[in-house]
Figure 1 (cartoon, one colour):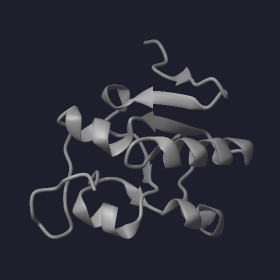
Figure 2 (cartoon, one colour; figure 1 turned 45 degrees about the vertical axis):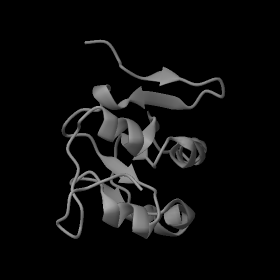
Figure 3 (spheres, helix red, strand yellow; figure 1 turned 120 degrees about the vertical axis):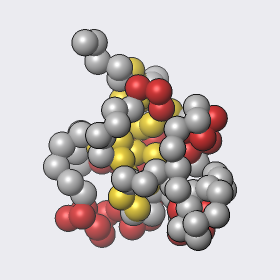
Figure 4 (cartoon, helix red, strand yellow; figure 1 turned 45 degrees about the horizontal axis):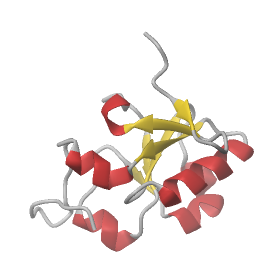
Length: 115
């Protein structure tokens, strides 16, 4: 099977939401209110601004980084790559995830949505 990753113009590895494996490690870098509204059930939530202080919480191996639309996750993936992590930006973020009909949950139990 070929590698579904591509690289943006700055060399940041990127993957389409449709190519993210079901068992992939996903790090959600959105803010708390965004997370509560809707997120990927298996994702680890670490807001972008807290990543440097919470590196010990990152699992080993490939990390798929997601935010709302892909901007924060791209910057986070780039920073993690420069610091020795195997990080990939999830292209289009949670907006693309929802648009693709992929499963999400909300902490409130209500219908999840991307905020």
